[in-house]
Amino acid sequence: MRGPHNIIRLIRTGATMVRTGAMNVVLDAFDAPAPLRMVAYTLGWPFQWLGYKGDPSMPPATRAITALGPAYIKFGQVLSTRPDVVGEDMARQLRVLQDKLPPFPREVAMAEVAKELGRPVDEIFTEFSEPIAAASIAQVHRARLTETGQDVAVKVLRPGVERAFRKDVDAFYFAARIAELFAPGAKRLRPMDVITHFDGVVRGELDLRLESAAASEFADNTSNDAGFQLPPVLWNYSARRVMTLGWADGLPIGDNDALGAAGHDRHALGERVLSLFLNHALRDGYFHADMHQGNMKVAANGDIIAYDFGIMGHIDLYTRRVYAEILYGFIKRDYQRVAEVHFEAGYVPATQDVDEFARALRAVGEPIFGMDATHISMGRLLNYLFEVTERFGMETRTELILLQRTMVVVEGVARSLDPRINIWDVAKPVVEDYIKSSIGPRAVASDLGKTALVLARFGPRLPTLVERALIAQAQEPEDKSARRPWKRAAAAGAAVGVLATLIITHVI
Image 1 (tube, rainbow, N blue to C red):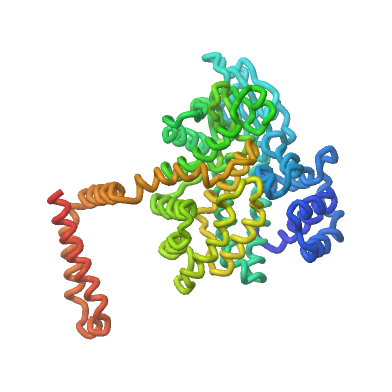
Image 2 (image 1 turned 180 degrees about the vertical axis):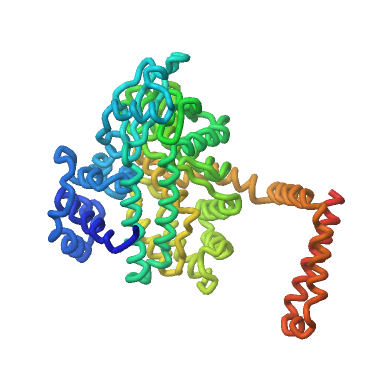
């Protein structure tokens, strides 16, 4: 229930941060100003006895986040990919959240597998290892199939994880409602919509049948991508709380020393991570939305192997074209066009001044170009972008939340491989190729062809639709039509449009 009882959960969050010693560490990592520090301690210190103790063997930030539960762990995973935002030490500490969390017993996992698949584990597998990786929602075991002898990875949900996420998400809803009520400036960020979106993503991640389907679709889309592999889904050994994939051997993409010792080109790997993500997002509109180091390996031949498909992003064709035009405008440093695209897409209210917005975007974009990526402070850049969006009344676009979040994570992974990588240099050829294929004469011809096919399917119904539109227009009382001439024009226009469409469709 999203009621006031969630206040206790939020107070406990601050209290846990204080009790574990994480409050100071986190505030220092974000270079928090003195007023914010004072507020944080005022809210957390008196209630620290309510905070969770956590595992004293862990560093403070990791200790606090793991004690608070899976939803907080998800947030920590994102921060672990951003050493440029939280610092190298903090990022290194948080990296254990990706796949090195405390596991649950092997026997519990085996009982869950037997329950979900309806057969004893000894019948299905000749081997079933201790946990080899444990994250916020599930853990993975290496096993061998009795039937074929194939090595596989078996993913099993944590016991009680659904209930734990439900508690956290309810508290997040409550916090979002409080933010909307008492912080008017936060309304444009649409916090309730953001949490609703997060809630939907989490619900999908807690049903491994949906993850199996996502992995299968992603594999179909990327089958021809050079230097990229996905382990196959074994549907006969998968269910709601269990998922079985083919085993994938490789080095963790976050282990720079091991990659270097194996002779892999880390700069090339970083560029490939970025270009693959952009291709999947723009070309397919379907992308892996949890691409942190814990979900990728590097095969012996240098291929990148991705797994864990619980969070996938989808964006429609129109949004992809808008996003590509915005990226392309930044790459070309055409800030006027970037501003116009924002207005055309409705991202910025029409009451704002497009030229002024273009100048504000120039102030964001210009520091990026012609500068070594190691000297760009992503933290300061994000802060300035926030100020710009607030100033011009931009609302949060929920359909782009996963895209924006994943862009941040992927750039963090790439720069952890090589800090000199600049996302704009890598993005340029990918975005240019997409622009050529989706915005221009070829795209117009393709769109017209698709429209004609849709209209052809409705061909038998078009005469009836035209007749109804004309009858409705003719039967409207004269006095109302006189008061609303635009409605008569619209009805007539609709009829003419349908007739024209009918003629064009049959000619084609």
